[in-house]
Each structure stands twice: as structure tokens, then as C-alpha cells.
Length: 210
Image (cartoon, rainbow, N blue to C red; front, side, top):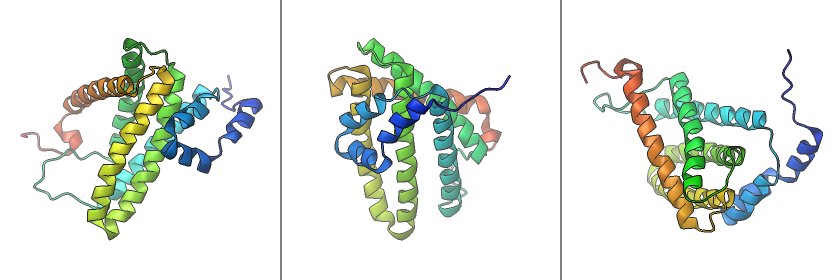
């Protein structure tokens, strides 16, 4: 049996409407409108999963580069994952995160579908990859400025993400959308703690006596 992952021509034509640069600017200046533009396209689920895997793979490459460029002191006890390990952990967490966003939004009265949430999460992941790459370069030339901009970008990213969730779930309140994001983040924190305890100290590069 041969699986055909090629999206329909009609979907491709509608997807072309979403030109990359205008959509990036729209995300930064009018996130609700950007979310509606993304949701207007019936993205094939195979394409969304492929895009998620690509975003996480690029994220893992940047993570590896950061490990080389900005190594932590040996006395600092911090989980050190291999690129493949990082990829696997982030992939699992992102999948859990999308399900958690759906559940928390529905609990607050939302009506978002899994594929819709997957589409907006993938788009924001791709933007995050570009941001991480820019921050890595900036850290090399202006570490203090990079730190400030990174904090500002994180806070602004939470605002954008909340607007996206509000559009997907039609919650009619950015605060309820932020609540759904907060609940999903708590679930992710618990899942991460579980994974770190499951894989064991040796996988993380820690001493077995730690």
C-alpha cells in the first residue's frame, strides 16, 4: 500500500494566499487576524505533522549549536540532552501540549478542534525557530541586549499565543484564553517532570548519585 501525502491542489491554491512575509507581519501586529487566516485553510493533518517534525528538528539543531557556542560550566548540574534526545522529548511534549490546549479550552467553554490547534501551534513553532536563530546570533555580539530582547519576546509571545487560542476556541476573552494556555503549560510541566524521572540520570548526562 502506498500512502499519498500530497495535499489537494485546491488546498495548495488556498495556502498560497497566505504569503509568508505578510503572515509574519500580521502575526506580530494583528495576531487575531493572523489566526483567522491560518484557520481559513483546511490543512491536511499529514502536512501539519510534517511541519511540526521539521520545526522541532530545526529547534534541535539550534539547541546543539547553543550547547557548543555557550557551554555550561562543568560544575553546573543541568540536564544535558543529545540532539536526538532533545528532539524526542520536545516532540512528545508538543503533542501533549496540543491535546492539553484542546482539553483546557473545551473545559473553559471553547470549541476548538485538534487540527486547528495543531495548525496554529505549528505556525508559532516555526516563528520560534526563527527567533531562536536570531537570538543565538545576537548573543554572540551583544549578550546583554539579547537577554533583554529575549525576555520581551517571550512576554509578547504569550500575548500572541493567547490571541491565537482565543480565536481557535472562540472564548471571547483573552484572559480565558490565557487561562487555557496556563493550564496546558502546567500539564506540560508535569509531563516534563515525569519524562525526566523516567529517562534516568545517565540519559541526561548526570551522575547516578545525583
